[in-house]
Amino acid sequence: MSRMYEIRWHGRAGQGVVTAGELLGEAAMAGGSHFQSFPEYGAERMGAPIKSYTRISDEPIEIHSPVLEPDMVIVVNPNLIGAVDLTEGLKEGGVLLMNTPQSPDTIRKRLDYQKGALWCVDASAIATEELRRDIPSTMMIGLVIKAMEDDSRALIDLETAVDTVEESLEGKLRPEVVEANARAVRRVYEECVKG
Amino acid sequence: MTSNRSRTFVLGEKKEMVESTYLALDGANAVSHAMRQINPDVVAAYPITPQTAVVQNFSQFVADGTVDTEFVPVESEHAAMSACIGASAAGARVMTATSANGLALMWEMLYIASGMRLPIVLTVVNRALSSPLNIHCDHSDSMGARDAGWLQLYAETGQEAYDNTIQALRIAEDSDLLLPVMSCQDGFITGHGVERVGILPDQTVQDFVGQYVANYSLLDVENPVTMGAWDFTDYYFEHKRQQSQAMNESMPIVEAVSAEYEKLSGRPQPIIDTFAMDDAEVAVIVLSSAAGTTRSVVRDLRNKGVKAGVVKPRLFRPFPAQRIVDAIKNCKAVAVLDRAISFGSPDGMGPLFLDVTSALYNAGACDVPVIDFIFGLGGRDMTPPMVESVYDQLMQIRDTGDRGDIVRYVGLRG
Image 1 (cartoon, rainbow over the protein chains, first blue to last red):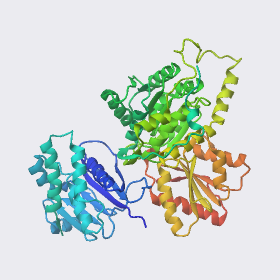
Image 2 (image 1 turned 90 degrees about the vertical axis):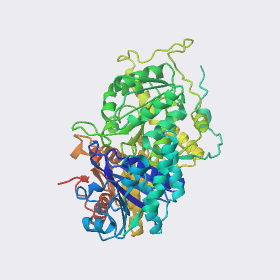
Image 3 (image 1 turned 180 degrees about the vertical axis):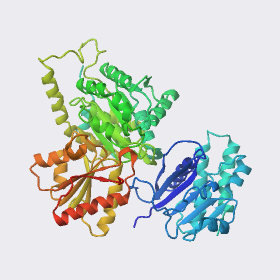
Image 4 (image 1 turned 30 degrees about the vertical axis):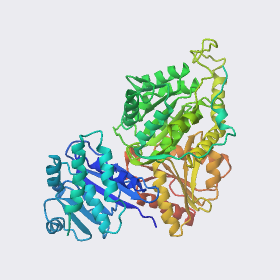
């Protein structure tokens, strides 16, 4: 059986969602996996709802079309609730990851979501504290790793992911900002709640 | 001037496999890296989505001094190909890239490049031709250029786009061929999709492509030649016959370069990639990224006991007719998947279908029922359920013997 893990990201254009997906893939690659990461290109305007996809597998990935039935859905921007069908196609027993200040109970009610696990974290608050800006996409990787571990499908470990994030930012950002990003990934990993 | 290059590498030399380094690259960037490693003398290009990233990344290598290529930012694709032709005629190793309307604007110059037997390598990041305006993938651009005298390679993945780019150069420059090569990959799907891509060491690529010494060069004043001159009713016909013969006889060169690259990289480089075809009853022939999606469906179908298979030509020009006939001649139903329409052909068939069916007819293999599916125009997704519906229709033909509509559509509404 193929052990492919399929992820769909939801965010708004300009939030770094595509980059986060690529970094997640790179972290998987660093751990020896194959990956694919690609956005769904629509009308390209800042703030528009966008989707992006990441596939991770221990074998070369042959399929070249959007993920229809994700194992995991990651919602980077909480205000997409009601604007986009966030759980569309999500597998039974799949995982939904939310950046939200709200509790898992509230999110379950708002989305009428029962079919899988739910993890919530206020990544925007962490981003604002650590980076002084609400750019939570990359740090959601910490939540992906936590949820995968909980689901006994640990395809990426936290240290590899933090290293990948650091390497990708080094040379582009000041060392203290790189450090803050790494710290944010770890904080998301620690501060998320399942419910 | 003597020819002291590529053939010496093709014949007999035993090379060990060299380990690749794995990078996270999109298909466009993978080609930029191949170009960086090749370090061509001249690149002349004009940006167009989704090709832009190829040249953008490469121009960064130029700016950084990583390569010593003469980079010519021109005012149009017509000028890009014109500059490539001039540079190649002068004896330079030349590469460029484009998409869709950019390729269309090169049209006049494409024929001039091949007619002058200039070994230019052109990356095409496939995109739909206007109108209506669309930036997404289909094959209308490169398929429209299929009679322009260029060899054409089609890549399924970023890895193949990288591998094909390097091989394309060696094929084009082979002194027994001297024809330009188009190396195609699917826009956005492959071009902007990030995957794990194995990159050979720079020196390995340099050794593989070798030093290019043009047999005939306008700058070789000791051996003056005329290129692209007036060619009247007296010789034009003979020259075109020679050009056609060169293309017809290019297969052994493509094979030799592919075999050598396969040994070097450890990655298979078949002319046509066949999967589960040995006992296949129902088969699909498809180019580029959709071949991977099709193969993943075939794995599932095989698990369910369906004798399904898939054929992916990596080479479209010259058309590997005999290989395709051999692969499908025992099938009970075959579908060709075309990401372009040859407007005005019978029922609006696709270009791949036209060549597959003509190959079957000419080989006397007329008993295989073959149908054509037009798919994915303007970037319409080709999903596994759509591929399954193709195989469902093939199984129906297998079971009933009724070929039904020859040209069908998949993923089309209404």
